Image (cartoon, rainbow, N blue to C red; front, side):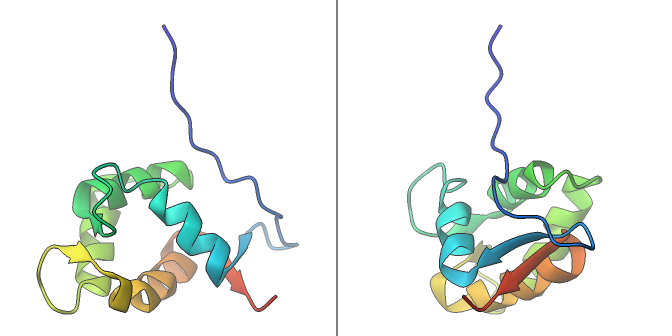
Length: 99
């Protein structure tokens, strides 16, 4: 049986956080956009939590959606990505860097 894995192949900082530029992070997020609608759903966000090695993916997925989905439509749209970046840095061990 084959297992599909999605890993983070980016540099790791001294404090153990995975580092992305904003562009890399957005590109990485879209790998989880299984229905290819350009938005991140709650179930897709749970997959992102799992891929970062996060525990409690259902709980963190809901918390991430509450944090990022400011218009309440159930998806993280392009205009809400900044909110998702903040959540990922605070809760998922990700660091967004400038270069």
